[in-house]
Image (cartoon, rainbow, N blue to C red; front, side, top):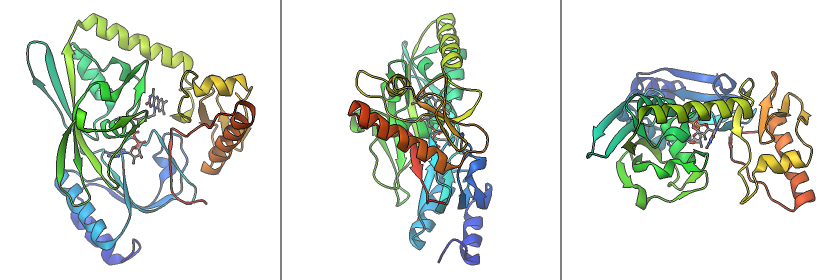
Length: 309
Ligand SMILES: Cc1cc2nc3c(=O)[nH]c(=O)nc-3n(C[C@H](O)[C@H](O)[C@H](O)COP(=O)(O)OP(=O)(O)OC[C@H]3O[C@@H](n4cnc5c(N)ncnc54)[C@H](O)[C@@H]3O)c2cc1C
């Protein structure tokens, strides 16, 4: 069976009650605004629909990948042959008092990090302030071990629940998980379905001030007026990638519609009509230059998937 097959499409439609978009241009979804067509983009509405969808896809050998808010993704111009599963509709958030000091916030993968930051500000919970302004979902942030201003998601994680390719869900304590810089090691095909964050009771004004301060720094330093996928390269120990790129005078360099932001050397922005190929060519140019001039291998932080156009 293949994805164009009528029977395949009917079965997928029977399983998933949420939206299903066939042959969908992914440039409509990625934060950087590039990407070719995906065979099918599905929005399961529950864990059960998610389980049935991945069991079905596994049984017919169709590849799939999960996405959250699409803010760390570059999908190539040839698109993705297979199914993209959006966790957007699986997004319940609940809080549980743990003791006098601690509260846990249990969030499904599709919830926005911004929802958790907002909740913590309203409920005087401290720990998530560093996530202010990171536009990802809970699932994407855990998968990427998102971080900023000296903190990472792993610092506030208590447990992560993961659906494996057979549809079973296992809950892992943080200590059982292998978090690395901008990466959580997971078996191929695993989908994060929820995470719990252990936060402490704090002082509302202090929490809100810190969030406001971080949002202001971001507005000043990041090119938020343009479409991007956040930091393109991983930082080097002791030297942010943006600083290296800036020192080499590469800010403002462009290929096609892709440009290295003049505001921040580690952001590539879409000036309006960029193709994924422009962004990838600019990344290659930067990598080559940094290797030749500094002997440093820059590694992408953004996830790159799909086929060349
Ligand atoms: C303006 C801007 C600023 C940013 N600032 C920061 C920052 O300060 N720090 C930082 O770390 N990042 C930053 N980012 C990058 C991005 O927001 C984070 O990496 C975020 O955590 C990605 O979440 P997402 O839901 O958008 O993931 P997506 O882009 O949807 O997916 C990213 C990867 O995670 C996988 N994934 C998504 N959901 C799941 C799931 N449920 N289970 C398993 N795998 C999953 C995808 O398959 C993909 O490989 C920024 C991005 C932008 C555009």
